[in-house]
Image 1 (tube, rainbow, N blue to C red):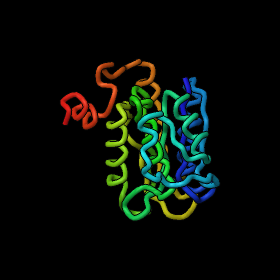
Image 2: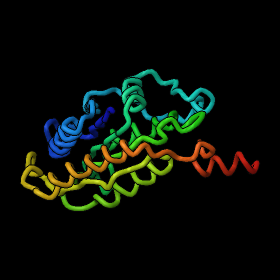
Image 3: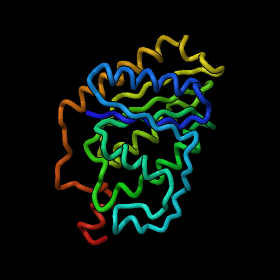
Image 4: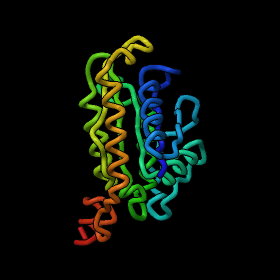
Length: 203
């Protein structure tokens, strides 16, 4: 069992990273192998919309995203961790999310994996951000635990937020339980519903 953590914060050892490190520590305690992917020093281009991945299931852009694809595909659980910037995820995080469009072809390559989410905001925006991720998990036919969130501004403040610290650990325990339950989507529904309906009915 493997759990990958994707860190979308550019601030080294900031509040988001502190919570992700706690999450990965908890996953390891519960028997999972772990990997941590920081987007801070990665070179990742935006999706160029060429849609060549629709035929191959692979992105044509050759950059650091390739190592992220590998980690995601090799893991049963994937934790996204992002600060909130203007009521949504960080730009680095969104770029990576957009590039995973390649993993939705020719069938949903992330299907049946378990998603986790850590969101840290200065004051507002956690729910807005979480809603986007929940739609993302649903689109990819992933199962997902409840998300963990916290509010903090100065570096390290999140450690004083008892709720956030405990919520992260419990979220990971939920993820482990979901992974061990071996739930699967029906094999017939191997693509997102909008695509499935258009293809099935020739729309």
